[in-house]
Image (cartoon, rainbow, N blue to C red; front, top):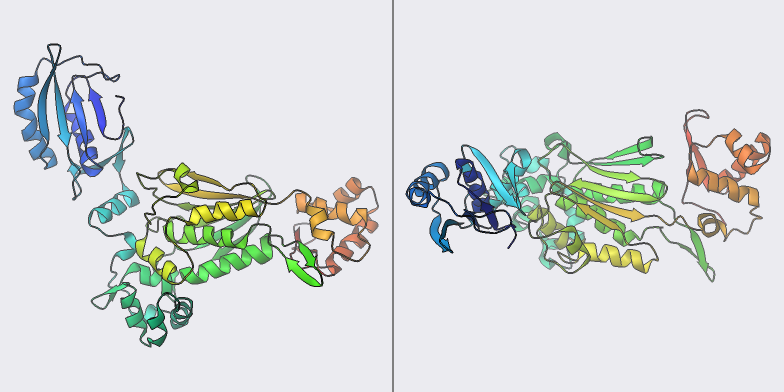
Length: 445
């Protein structure tokens, strides 16, 4: 069979292959065959007797492990099968740590190494105790807000008046010491300890040109609420419709899907690096990106079908679940897809590698002007529609450019943009020369 996660072939033995055995031991175990070509055909070795004598000592002295060695024969050709089991403790070779991933070998460094060692110890980054944290670093208002949200799943929590007792019952403290998750979730000055724990939102007109940026800080519950509010009120559209006499505003990306994606980024991101969660907004798309170590047993295709969840930060995920903000582990990405399809949108796109994850939403650009203006009782002229469409496509569009496109004078453009402002459809951000137009969600009948 071809090489894969648990199989590797070598025609001869070299001591550098101890790295590969180290990678097997740190992953799910595996077998190294010596005297076999890459295509799986046996070529044999001449020094099998010597290797049978030497290799066990090298495994013991350089790796600190036991590996089973079998001498095999195929049509008179001798070759070796070296079997390594998965080890529960981290295994190193000459002070370096390696991990088998697919058919490749990776040297673990930095945050990846730190997360790997924590997992081997049965812990996650958010579960580490930080002796510098204390009760004064906890925001009591966020605790109260959580108790209200968690009342259905934790009925007893409403009657608990001791904030430290709440954290202990959530497994966020140990022997009176707070864990990292406690500060991330309930801290009153999170960025004092974890500057990277924030969300950055950028509005782009091209791949490199950014019109505006918002930086959201605070604890994770605050970041969730502020991020969603800014996306809803500042960057996304809510076309107006009416059911009888009732006014309806429907966000262009389903709010439930958007919330699930933001929460997914907050609880699954890697917090041991300096990167932030980034939300990139363009005319056509909204992309939510975060650094993340995908599970070895989970790939991006699995996210659109039922799958087991292996949270990057177990305590963060568990607390958000108890707050009623996520329904069940492993269902989040499915709900995002289902909600978008139900709303008539294209399926969102998931992208992932060993260090990065993103969710790309497609915005409802088709028939934008018609959907956004069809419920106005005023005489919404063709000129107004064209101007609104030009602003949508290019927020930095100038009066002269609009006049040339629409075919009317600069004065007429100014009169029309003033009318759009009065209708609550647009506003001007910044100066006349250096600013840009912004389409607002608020409209008037």
